[in-house]
Image 1 (cartoon, helix red, strand yellow):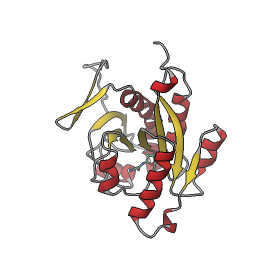
Image 2 (cartoon, protein in one colour; image 1 turned 30 degrees about the horizontal axis):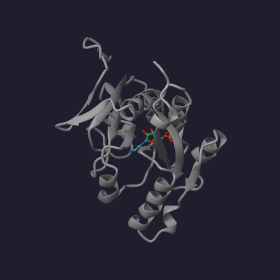
Image 3 (spheres, helix red, strand yellow; image 1 turned 180 degrees about the vertical axis):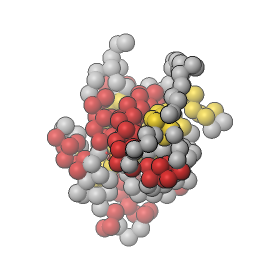
Image 4 (spheres, helix red, strand yellow; image 1 turned 90 degrees about the vertical axis):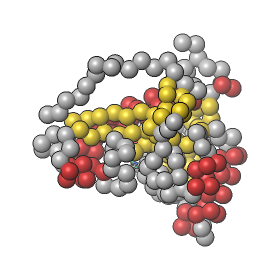
Length: 221
Ligand code: GAR
């Protein structure tokens, strides 16, 4: 495949609140010449987020906007929007960004706002997904990348990956197994979105040029 010209690469902002391991996987993917997106900005609502230093170390512009310094969600998001505008951002990836977004912001970015969630949506929206999956005794768990809708952890699903739940799993061991799959599917999903391969039809994301093994199955135990 020939490399996309720089002008054709979508300018992406990654929003983080913490260590930014998913951010790092997206940065690594975008460092490849044939990737259809470049990471033009990393923004955090927490000035102490570990991922900010990682991004700076990779030569990426960073912005820290401490949400506690803003009087309202709306004024915080106005500051975010102005950072996104000044960096000419075309796609926003939430990667462990732990702030709820207002419907106004979500609608402004409709179809261009993507999130990763550590569960097989629509199961286990919200927090503590691994603890809850273990408590329910599910045998298969996983992660999802989806377009963001105004409701929390909802919106058309772009990609999912499943992992087995083992008898001796703890929330931490299960989180580690899921996280490895997050790092695999987020760069893959962003590639699909940034290259224009995705379209939404009746709430489903259809992907052009992707072939899925119809016989693939994960059986657990
Ligand atoms: C990831 O597991 C991500 O799926 C989750 O936060 C973690 C961030 O880790 N996101 C959510 O729970 C959003 N609902 P990271 O900072 O190492 O990417």
